[in-house]
Image 1: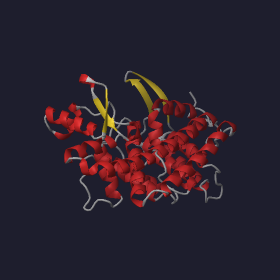
Image 2: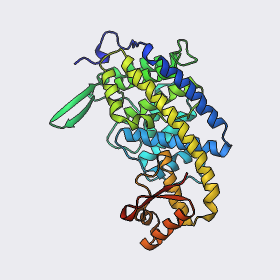
Image 3: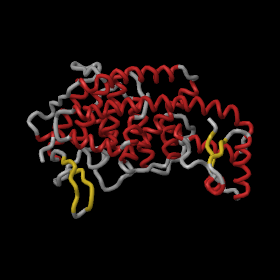
Image 4: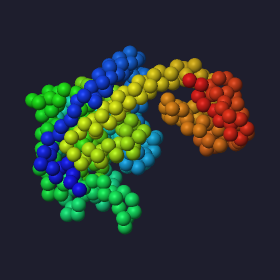
Length: 367
């Protein structure tokens, strides 16, 4: 099989703009709406909304790779790196701390040019707790770098990257392309989503690191989008990708077999649009959460408040399966009788809405 980097037109990517024209217009429209929503929030709520989107990005980018990060650690890490925790919280998970550090750094430095040192620093902060791999430098192994799935004795090879000896030259060319096509570069690409989508395929096809390529590649895509929109943190691209993870891998695998990226960009533009719509919903949810807590906070006990805040962490989708006595006990350590009484009290005051009945009874937030 011949991959994109083995073809004579690499890396002269091409695409037909016709299938993505409507999507690009919709992205511009929704980006404006999201920006307007954020700008219209009081400072405290705006900070909460941006923090929520950053947390989702860190968690979901790792989830795409099968890494499930503890949310409290991600929250603490991002708040630490933003300077919001004094003194900084302890973060037990090194992976969560690395993801939080990367997310905040990409947001803070989005306008700066991409350099080899920047990419190395990103990789070092992301993978600092991982032992046994080369961190903060290009891969150097002699064995082929392959993306595989299936059984060890009969693997399915989805992609094979260029040899390690080619990585420094390929990455120098990629970084030069990224900076040249930035909004302030000598050859700017008109649409942020197109540049971001091409950058992702380009980087992932070089696959320059032993591990962490997907997460670094999505950080580069986020940087390209932020540069094009002239502002960071409007949405979580990784959240949108993770929602349909198999479609992402299928589209990427197909894109790495040709330098015609039309099909990939149709997928990617739709994914960016979905991320913007989701961001709008999440920002409105932050507003509803603030109003809800203002209304009910004074009537909640300490343990009830803990449970309510945990339910809000689930976001606009709602707490999976609802809250029930078993989950309440796990969160608070109270007896079953107390858990049942607390839940009934919360339902009686309109804080929760009961769903189901009998042993399957559960509750959702009344937002």
